Length: 287
View 1 (cartoon, rainbow, N blue to C red):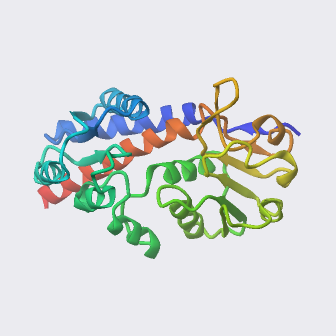
View 2 (cartoon, rainbow, N blue to C red):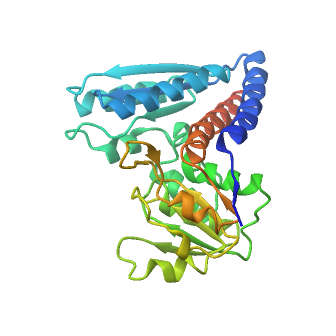
């Protein structure tokens, strides 16, 4: 069996067309959706991510405000700027690109963003809403993974899902979203003694640890859906994920490629969250 590919680029295109239509409808009513992106310092990877996010905004009819600040920016100055953006009615989403310079407390920065503008879904209020099943912004990467499952007609209800990784950005919220969709969820991590014992039982595996070849062919149940969130480089410097793609593809039923899988979906779900924030703000203004 050779697994079918879950094409994140094609799915992103569909979802972004919907975002563009919703943005146009809002703009026609005098509410142009706006996203503020703050970049502190000159981390090369962050610069690429930010450039891609801004371009995606513009292509989908969203206004984007990109602010580049030197690495010497003080924490107090950054927090003050976020408070200004919280109060700006033209801005519906605020994104501070991580990582931040060592002298700035990332947690404090995230908590300063208004939960109504937390389009990354990282605020404690957003995490709490996800935990108890209330409406709120979902972190973009796990939200994108759920859309990918939906796109192939994979209903997690009653299925065993294994999430490899327990980060606040992917692992934990991914497990919560799968749980909400009535999957039986196991979270594995670096202290899990026999990872393969869990993954071999899984109908759905989400690999999100940032470590090459953490999932190999003999660890996968035939026909399973494998979602690879990892972003690594192989020995030749080529982009690869956490999954041994060549081997696993011969066992799994569905698999996401790297690149072209989860990556484009992460930025797309940021646009979806921003348009939702703008729609809520417009409804609040009308009410």
